[in-house]
Amino acid sequence: MSKALICIGDSLLGIRISRILSGKAMAYDIVNNAINKEDLLRYDIFIVHSSYKLPGLYSFIENILIHNPLPVIYVSLNTMSNQFQRLSGNDWFVHIDEVKMDSELPLALTMFQKNKQKIDTLLT
Image (cartoon, rainbow, N blue to C red):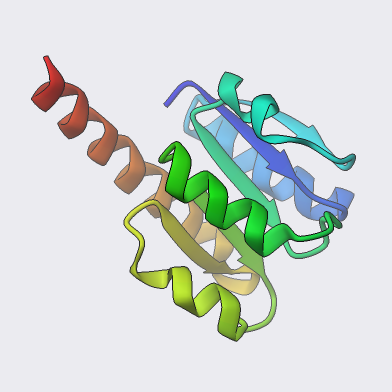
């Protein structure tokens, strides 16, 4: 994966996430403003933290997963709410506990990268 979009309202946690991505030699952009689906076309993975305020965030993520399978990593301090639990069966969605982020985020990135490589191999 070459580039990630991080949507977050917590700048300190943004630094932690950027450190993890830098350790995996992954480029990234961090935003705290509203985005739309077209913005995601430039990215290979979408990381969103619960502090990111976007009206209809769940629907936005669900549409991403349905229309263009882009890996989505949702990071929060709380256990998954009921609406995000419905997405847990989707192969392109992972919920990460903020407390375990230093170990779980690199694993999720590796998993998505391997899945993408397998799909690319099948398509060629």
